[in-house]
Image 1: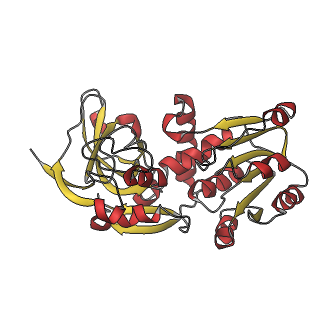
Image 2: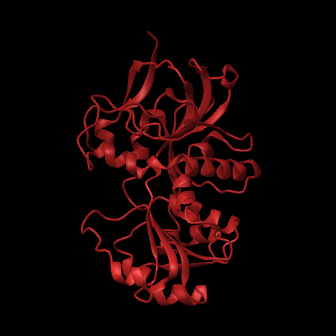
Image 3: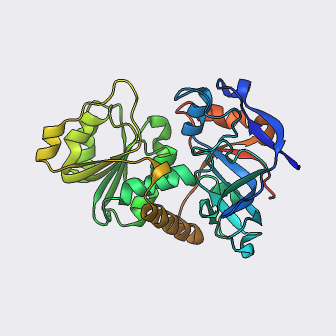
Length: 332
């Protein structure tokens, strides 16, 4: 038996209290799997919520968190082309319904979940992608192209929002408008937003319509319930609001008939269960942008492996601008 170091928890609670390095057995790839030596693990709010116990009791006796990451394939299981050994990859869904995610020296995954990382992209950039970039892609493009459309990205300074702004610009949106706090407004502009509105302004909807020269055709929505009044005021007939988040309390009340008679679409996006064709489209587009350096990947924090709890803490508030990474083995 060969051991490895992994950031683990065996009870839920505050990150600095429950997350610690442990020696655990290194996994071996089974049929259809690859073994990845992890360079960087990417922490996300969903990882932090699971670890904190905010969503449910601990799902397994021992958990290695984090769904995102990047590294190098060092072994292949039966049925996997051995030529993949040595390949640089970025990871998705490493911790989804599994006990052992990417916050470890090694992780085993189905080979499809280890995506070739273009040479133009660094490991740290690869670890930023899985949840934020694929969420942004699905929200933007699930209902067709955005060429010539007015796009509103709420939370445009956040991880998903920053990718959504960039992708909308790359695909020819007419106007890309973001909402953000004053602290994140400059970041949203740096990502390419044509205009940034303070979401707390009482007249935010009027400002959005003025910047769009009318209404909005596509909304990428971080906070569905709280933003419903603005959504109703700015979304065009036949427009789409694609949402990936909303505060649990109070549960949003859907304005069914106003949306019905405007023929508007509400799309829910949960990145962990994307349809296979949507997943493939996102990977294809993301890798294409990576190859040409067309995306900016902002890193707010790079925590040492032994202090990986710092990345989880960074995911618990709204202050950070960019990804929270754990430097597991940057030279993998």
